[in-house]
Image (cartoon, rainbow, N blue to C red; front, side, top):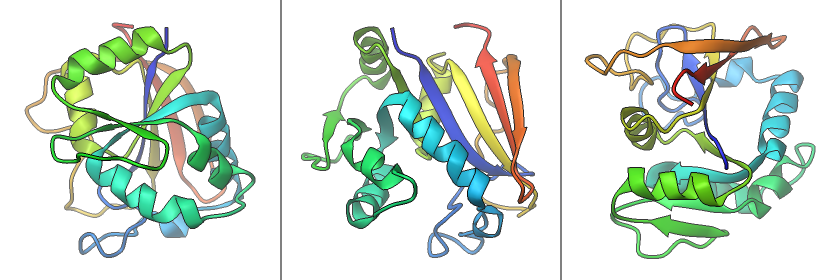
Length: 189
């Protein structure tokens, strides 16, 4: 049985919006000063360990526009292009780029996927999808990359008014650029 692993880049004040996209909102692209060689090492490792990506429509469309023409990055481009993708969307009717669409009851469909797959489903970005997965207790592990920047505004990973829950700390790693990777496991898994 596979696990759902949520990997998110966040600021110190919890903003996850547009870490690499300066055009998305006024603070977009905030992560770029903190990308370094060991950052890439950890990303490649996480991509290689996952069986498939689980993405929301917006993240999928951004990735599908960027990754097919990417090359190198220690094999990350090849891995991202080859990896199966499951895309949650109520509006898309077709998904290319090695992807299958998930419509309907997201919680039900993801629970079925977890049972069908032997490897892990890696969720990147995809804020609304992540919120749904958390609401239905489907996240097994969180890999939260905390960056030493405070934005004051933007969409956050953990919403105000969400249900309380506790996690177990599994590991802490840091990058030479000052980001800290906190890995937590769900107590419900």
